[in-house]
Length: 442
Image (cartoon, rainbow, N blue to C red; front, side):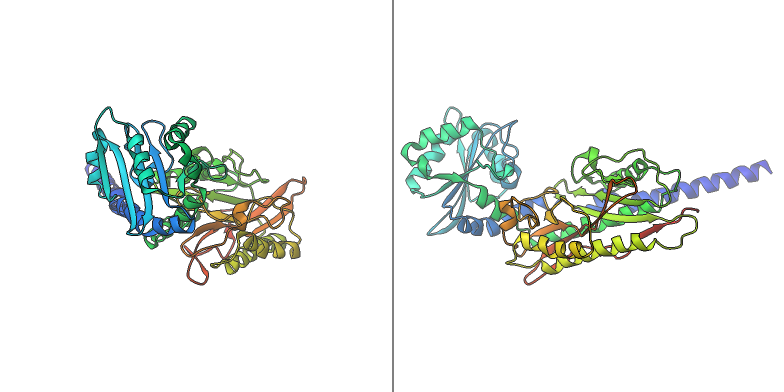
């Protein structure tokens, strides 16, 4: 009998191990994600999108200075992430077309040239300044406008240090008056995503939504906490080999109580009658970021559906999200997308929500591009006046806010992701149609 029992237990153990191995195999990150597509996408972005971005910004030449340890934020977008000594990257249009030329220290020039990104990599011997050579080249080309990464409005276009700028100005002499900010150029370039990138963001958005739905299935009212949901999602990220879409301490933001804004999940116990918000994003290939929210309601003991008021709040927020999507198309300003759903918020008697309807998402959660906000602000950000273009990707909300019994505020923010197409916008993944219902008893 003992032998039979031992054999039975051993068999169950082996089956369990086999099942676990199969599950791990199904989500093996190296198999699931495959080879990182960034090198080829980066090259295509430079050669296909950058020439047009230069023209739109009325820039003849763009100068990016990369260096070791304190590199430019755009270094890995142009192939300068492994720079040791100062390397100067030049991108320009002339009567022969678009060109990219790099003056690189000899120690890094071979590897940079082998990336096969740039038209020409000039290997500069030790003791000779790459910046001197680059400035001499610029003077000989007699460019009218030279963009550099100094910006008061775009942090990613503000990578040039004060000392680097002074050196460039001194070498240019009287031609330093030709220097302009690269803000508009970088905006034009980074705000547009290639179809290959949209496909990656679509996969990330789908996973982000699926993880959240799985997380809600683990909730035990009266026992589970907001932090428990966050821990579940952190484990899913580990299983799939992805990183946080933004600050790890605040991703995911799980909240079953009053509004907390951008914050961390607490040990608040989830109770019947709670509306739960998950704001969650993942980073895939260490490059592209998602940002999606999913909402649930915890049924009370005698409930089989959400109360009428909660259902109204949900439908109101969802309607705002759909109105925003319908307003999104090439040529429309960001402020007008915000206005489209604010009209519905007013009709639904929603409390005021300070957040913009949406924001660009791609390389970071709050990416470069038009801001979908400002219609109810006294001071409208310039980015809200920018027009949407084909290839831009956004995360955007439909809002409804109401006061709880203690006068604190609770907001449903139906956040989805979308891409701008030729004549409209489309969701990257299936949007949440119904409020997820969690029974109070298992």
